[in-house]
Image 1 (cartoon, rainbow, N blue to C red):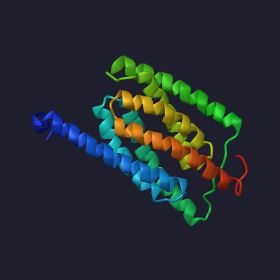
Image 2 (cartoon, helix red, strand yellow; image 1 turned 90 degrees about the vertical axis):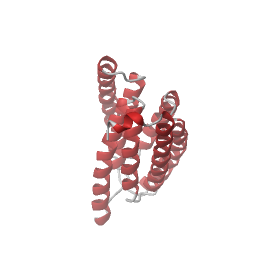
Image 3 (tube, rainbow, N blue to C red; image 1 turned 135 degrees about the horizontal axis):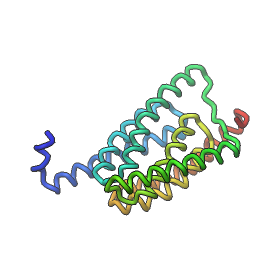
Image 4 (tube, rainbow, N blue to C red; image 1 turned 45 degrees about the vertical axis):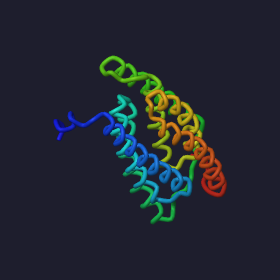
Length: 205
């Protein structure tokens, strides 16, 4: 199968990539809409979109992003299981982290980003390794908080989405760039929606 791919015309590869990008986009949009509404069905859509995205990022030589989306697949499985259990227990609240927790998250994510960027810039042909690594590292943290239903995750995503728009445009992933613009708007909606829910629920943890 790998050898047969040598004879595929560039136009065919581009058409396949575009189709994969469209499907990943639709899955991603469905995921975030259901997530804002706190519906467990969000997670399988997130997993599907992430699997499709891995192919695109490897093809575009954005290895940090490919690594990130592999994490998204694992986090999606974890989120799916965790939310199902919490819903069954009727205990799946939106929570908040204290300032000290966010300072620790930012410091650790920054250190990981610098390490990852150095590795990819030294040992691979990665494009834009530093911004790629920083969006990747902080997305790990934001995804973890998303599974835990931490309110501030949406603030992280707003910043990350804005930074990612340029990165995707630079790698000619125009559909993804458009998707991230929509994500940025939806992240604001998520912050408002989860904030409203939080005020009726749990204390800061």
